[in-house]
Amino acid sequence: MNASYVLTLSCPDRAGIVHAVSGFLYERGANIVEAAQFGDVATGLFFMRVQFELAAERMPMAALRTEFEPVAQSFSMRAKIVELSRRLPTVIMVSKLGHCLNDLLFRWRSGLLPLDIRAIVSNHRDFYQMAASYDIAFHHIPVTADTKAEAEARLLEVVRAEGVELVVLARYMQVLSPGLCAQLEGRAINIHHSFLPSFKGARPYQQAHDRGVKLIGATAHYVTTDLDDGPIIEQDAARVDHTMDVATLTAIGRDVESVVLARALKWHAEHRVLLNGSKTVVFR
Image 1 (tube, rainbow, N blue to C red):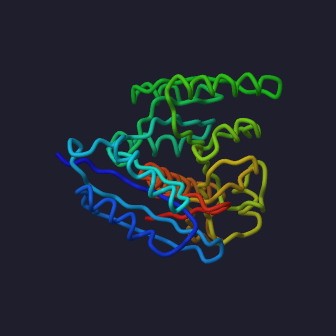
Image 2 (image 1 turned 135 degrees about the vertical axis):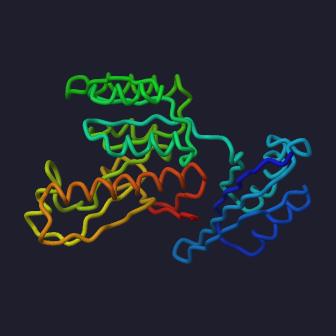
Image 3 (image 1 turned 180 degrees about the vertical axis):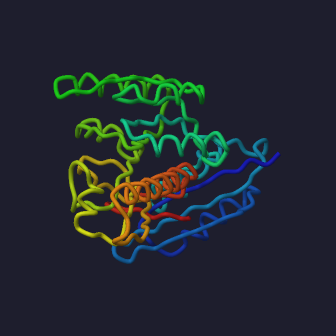
């Protein structure tokens, strides 16, 4: 039986990369079912994602990785080969706003989100019943200024114990320390409204309403030590007008946040997102 794999890579752009990759796969009897590539003129880097099928008994993935290594080295590639059916072990973090959490759990239970959600972590108890209804472990980890280091250490214990490869900040309203951001680099995704850098702090939708904004948006990005400034994966917006009150703006904004976060997580889990410095390449 054929298994589905994904090869992703980035390297300095030069002639022969596509030929080398496709030739390698052809020689091993693989069938390419989807391929995308991008050459960034500004950075001189080349990015590629190839989805292919191959009989697992013909060549195990470990052997495939080993045999591809000389190709990767010859082009100075950062490359990885993964099995597409494998779902990423994930923990979701949330505070007191549960719209994104609720949306993600429904999509996950419906088979629309290729994740393996192993735990929910929160600094409040509000959603322990929701977690229980999905038979997911719930960890209440309170956070104060005095206990922040201890709380982050407990979070990392959960991450390690569950073998977590993706941390989702689904409206988790605590700033992660630089040290924790560094440990989670490339495997933590955050969602927030797109009013930043305007309307910072509390009640952003009230501030936006007071200024008469015409667009409500959301941004999903990788977490970095620069607060809310990591590489962007996905954004979207919805038009609003003067007839809408704060409650309506907030409801529209939360809908956009939920959809944008779900898209970003799906693309990340399908290995469609490649880091390009402070930006991303997303092969949708």
